[in-house]
Length: 96
Image (cartoon, rainbow, N blue to C red):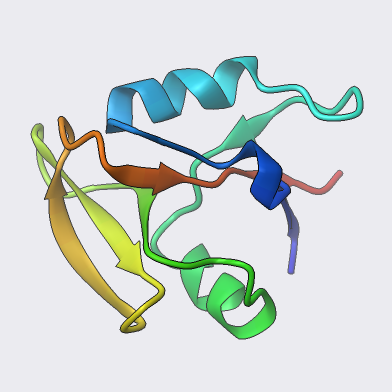
């Protein structure tokens, strides 16, 4: 894995725009540069981290109003409206 996953304690539920804003301001132990995982990165996360449950935002947009979300309950992807404020946000950071 070429990225670090933020701790579960930093997880929030919010809409997609606020999730992206959260990624810009989050600092953990002096580390910044957090971002939403891509749809493809969720495959790696699924294999390596069982600390996820429910639905999570990805950074992979479908169009101007929808984004792919990952269900860790069913190991599947679904389309979600960016305004939905009940989806979890768990950020990743590229390892240097």
